[in-house]
Image (cartoon, rainbow over all chains, first blue to last red; front, side):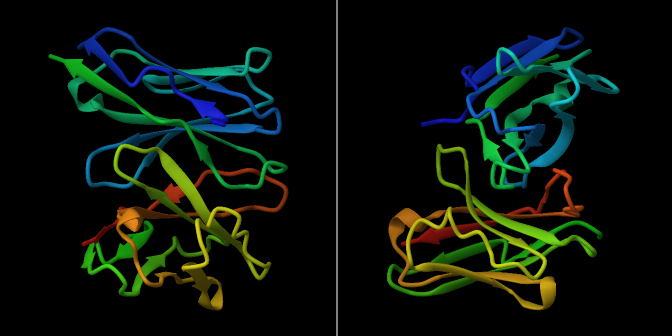
Length: 113
Length: 116
């Protein structure tokens, strides 16, 4: 049973446009959500996170939105750049959910020049 | 650098041999995690160390897998009698793990294990 799902395995966006990556979760014990970016042959790089007490967190071109009632979060990248092309993983954890990260399957983002 | 480091970066071994993978967490981080990513799969939790507490081993796939963390810093993941299905990228992460706070985990570059 996948507790964190990223239903789009890939996404292609034109440079300068908005990229929206989506993630759904089922475990109501999750209270902290993170997005990681991963290039081939490298470990995941932390991008941005959000606590369940918030519904939005912004850091430069990256914004994460959390809808707790829908158990849904999204990552917006505006404007998208070719260097953003990578696999993006959504992850969730919680103090009462075992502390480890539960990852989605990833979405491969391709930003075309 | 100040990030999480792992060694070796690549390891090729024969089926049935034992392997040891090493992780050096970020200095001062009390929590250390091991994950793996098999080909075409997502990242899967293996084991978690927090300070001097007993580790959370709930993610270890079999008793061939074990890990230890000496002195609250460096960790070694050992896989005994390796099987081909153990082939994966093994990732280590650490976090400050401030008491009562859920915090961000920072990952190392991983060790790519290939079992022939």
